[in-house]
Length: 281
Image (cartoon, rainbow, N blue to C red; front, side):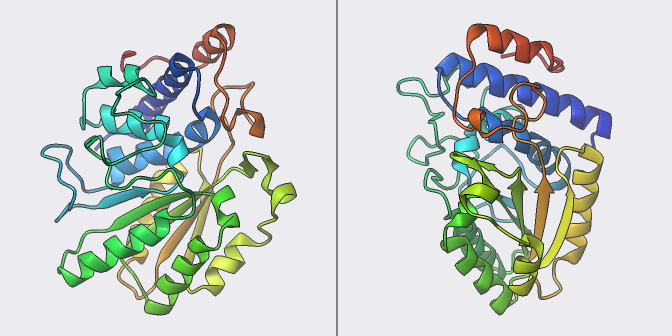
């Protein structure tokens, strides 16, 4: 298993990949990708029981991850490539014509690691619930993970899925919210206040954990605790308190980098703040 130092090094490279991919395509979503990088690295390089090759859609005998907020595809693609699912060099094709690395993950390109199309927000948890139920039916004891953005909680479908999980005692699922308080049009408190999110999700029958989602030690330890909570007739939710644009000072704490590409000068400045640890693609 990698050390915390090694995980942080991987996360730094993932953030470099994100900046370079969005800059190269002149489009994409760097803010949420940067805020969720630590969670995705901890999950794929430390916590999940998964294998990149051979990849199959069913994932029998493996933990399954479902990305709901599909616009943070730069982070997810980088993690998948750095995990061995497809060549790292393919990251350079992000959002290019005929690429498998679409702006939002899609299944028709048959990119290894992608099990659902997640361009439409609010749907991922429902899919994750279906996968978790299938694993129960098939006597597969592995877990299902799902990441959502806080902005997509404005929609009703995630809450319907939460109600189902709590009511039906779905206890092989660990969901998470990237709680960076920013969405496309501004601060979540201004667009649609989420109020006491922990209390609301707890009321839906979930065990709710919280952590600093940009502290690798906390993320790893919280995910390990979450695993200990599974199998006890309750679903588990982790609220990841993060910063939009984490790692790049001029992107942090503002919704303006939700879906904007940096200029050449901004890219150079961003990369100067992120250590190259695994080699750029």
